[in-house]
Amino acid sequence: MRYQRPKGTQDILPDVAPRWRMVENTFREVCRRFDFGEIRTPIFEDTDLFVRSVGAETDIVSKEMYTFEDKGGRSQTLRAEGTAPTVRAFLEENLQGQDRERLVKLYYIAPIFRQDKPQAGRYRQHHQAGIEAIGSPEPAVDAEVISLALTFFEAIGIKGTRLLVNSVGCPACAPSLVDELKASVADSVGSMCRDCQRRYETNTLRLLDCKNEVCRQVTDGAPKMLDLLCGECEAHFDGLREHLEALGIAYEIDPRIVRGLDYYTKTAFEFRHDALGAQDSIGGGGTRT
Image (cartoon, rainbow, N blue to C red; front, side):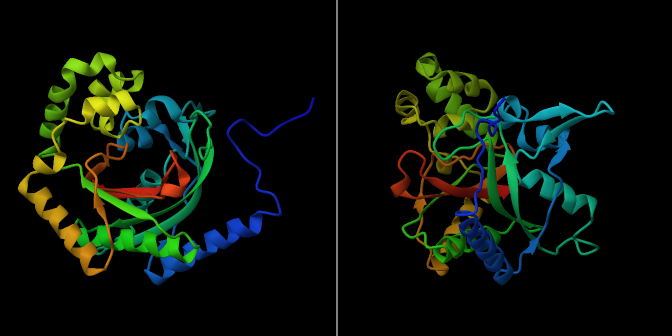
């Protein structure tokens, strides 16, 4: 029997490994300049960590996780995203110490596992470089994270990156955003794709970032989230824009940027590059609860 690599994975061979090493080392150097420290977490975690933090109804948890039961009968899951394990380690290891106001800045480079349909630019094991700034809700922190990412892209020769920003509200105003969105598309849900019909009930904001043309036409007339924010979220978004402008960072406001995980609140952002076509996203993030 001739063995092959599992579907949706890749071998990094000697002729390309130096380029991977260059990208990883450049990311580490940029993070060091921004005073972020490296963290390495286990390749698997308790399944409930992802269910509770990412959201039981998200695509990642409901369809994409590699989950297994260990010999002790405990449900374990291969690392499905980077934030939840990092925050778990931050809390478990008490990285903030006694100073609850201290900003803790961490970065990681790690393999991520998602049982998704393999396609161009999307693997079941992909490699993610991520940063987490924990301990401050201020929009200046979001601006610093965005600045770090853009500095990294430029350092590895990626030019022409577009920054798209939005706000997805907070627990005080997000429910009304969801209600308004559901009401605006209720009569047309049956014409939307199967994923959107499911998300209508379980993860409503994800309707906005569906790439299906019919679905986009249905949501074109949806209320804009920025028009429905509470005062606190509106001030936070205005603050983000002010900090970006002070840093000389160009941005576009895009009401369809919502991200796909339940822990996002307030700021949501995405980096895109038009040269990549349909798979044009090269990074993203936002404020997390």
